Amino acid sequence: MRKLNANDYTTSMSGLKFKIAHKRAESEKWSASPEAQRRRMIKFLQDVVEDLKKQDAQELEGAGKPKTKRASEQSKAKSKQRIAA
Image 1 (cartoon, rainbow, N blue to C red):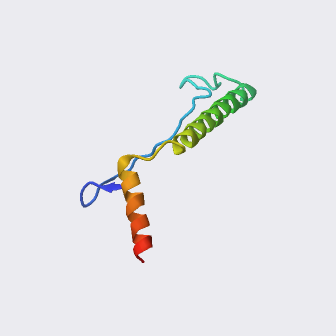
Image 2 (image 1 turned 90 degrees about the vertical axis):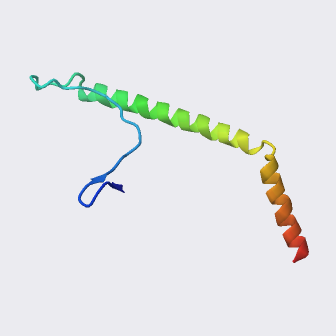
Image 3 (image 1 turned 90 degrees about the horizontal axis):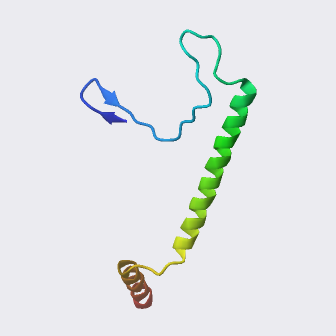
């Protein structure tokens, strides 16, 4: 939340939104049956799980990469502090 002025605030959200069916204003029926909506939601969620697993695997692969110069310098400085203590 962010304050814009004395009386106004703004908020924002991030995330995913899935369209599983639609309903026209002049119609009382949804474009998909409840069973079809459920199958579609399950498919969306399975895709999200797969994407998260891929991201997790990529992050684990990235953890094994060599440290950057700055990170290695920080590590050396900490080692020197331990030795001096």
